[in-house]
Image (tube, rainbow, N blue to C red; front, side, top):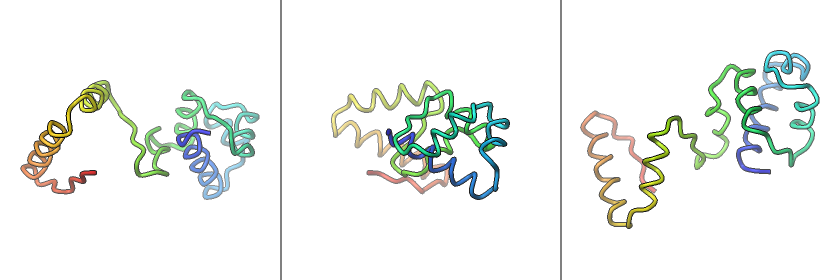
Length: 119
């Protein structure tokens, strides 16, 4: 089971426990077959498809990215420009990466957002 599937499973089970919603009710709300939800809840190694992740988020009334918050090292990129930035950042030398991080920190300091966290 991927880390994402595990996080989605945990968030789904937590949502059902907190709301008292049945699997049947969630099935109607999300558009996911009840049998799929049974598998997600019962099988620890169940791998959730991307389309079902979106439906689970819809059923919970949250953005899909919220389902990945079990692990603070997991991040959901929201648009194509973010993917481009990450892919190209990975191609840089360590020195170049440091310069990029410094630039981002300076921009955040300039806007009053000094919560920058570097690895």
